[in-house]
Image (cartoon, rainbow, N blue to C red; front, top):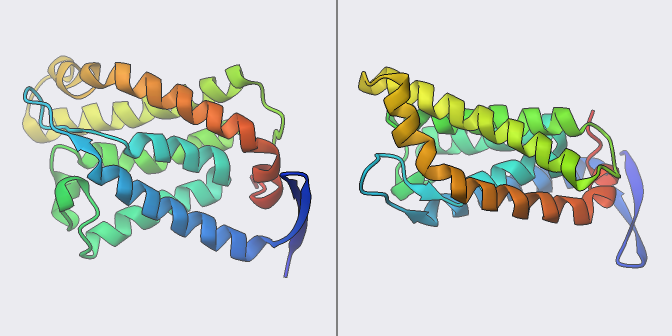
Amino acid sequence: MPQVVVKALKKEYVVNKTVAGVIGVVSFIALTVAGAYIRVPLPFTPVPLTLQTFFVLLAGALLGRRLGLLSQSGYLLVGIFGLPVFTGGLYGFARLMGPTGGYLIGFMLAAFLIGWLLGNDSEAPYIKIVGAMFIGGAALLACGAVHLALISGMSLKSAFLLGVLPFIPGDIIKLLAAAAVYQAVQKPARQVFPNI
């Protein structure tokens, strides 16, 4: 089995990459679920404010494009097949057809894009990390707004005003926090989860 020696916290650890990959994917499925339960309903939009995007951004950065995509795909599959993991404790394929379905699909795109943009750079400067997460987050919001417009019959402008604009301040805070977390651990993360 492929192994790597990781230096972290002034110690060396031998890590099995396959086991680490499984643990990483399962952990980010669980964190995305937890993020769905940390929610603030907004009275003027059918889309609640959640902590999920913070974990989606980190999944793409920490796990890389392949495992980050796998973690978010796994999250969707767990919810589609009956566990109450979506916002509000909901589940089922019908959630993908609801007002938040585009955001759920955008989770996969965002995680992949962030991992792809960061590549295998284990010393990415903060501005590069922020840029990659900004592009991933923008793609996530775009998926959500387009889907919201399609399923509700509203214009793209209205979907932007209801499904993107209210979330920009919170998303900026989550993005900056996620970028800071990733920058602090990017070197061991790239050793354990090579972005291939």
